Picture (tube, one colour):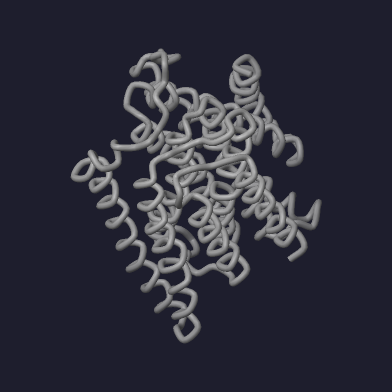
Length: 351
């Protein structure tokens, strides 16, 4: 696997550079960009896994979610620059659905096949449940409801206000979890490991790789965005489907790989932190930042989703809250989440 990632990065990225210079066909560039981003995401995952061993499960999961979402944030900024606001909003929806249903579902399933019952912090599950209800149901649904009786300028003003509140609350939540109430979240039922893990890379090397990979992702992402119009015309895909499925899966490849790997190692605390923590970061930090960034772009983005997107995200949040509230997971719960993702994917494809 590591050799394959090396090929995707050290061969894929230079080929993308050459293809961009020579103006290769968009279809070829799309696949090259996707493969390169997946390879770079793999390196981001390995670097954050090394940092997780040094920093602990919660900080490690936060780092993984942050750098994993950095990929999507970069893709979204270039997409906003191209004026494709619909794809950006859809990719945010896809991230929420992908992390909650696809990533967490496959993590529960893969870990449950190997271990009959896996445990994670009940305190973290309750904390995440509260934030999921607030971020998805309150912060996303409310703007859509109020926008029905508002003009465009008022809707944008409402979105900016909500964005500022979300960012402030997200930072306050990190302070609460990692500083003032750190002891509460450290008192978990996570299984004790019999041997001490040695990180693959040192702390300094991991940080350097994260920075270099993020820079490379920025370049490749810009090339990927240029292929979106071709995808729509070639396959008849809507902006909604491209954003919800294609951009979300490619942009969150790092979390996908890392969360499932951690679950198979019986590190459900890290796995859940990556999947759910990434969702919360997308909803409470990435989305608000994009609203603010869009003020400097050709087209401003209001935090208003379509009703199919809202219903899908609310359903996903409630389903995850229900299956994770006991602090335990098994393969059937994972299959349940994955099946919900497939059903929603078919719906967005046919929409």
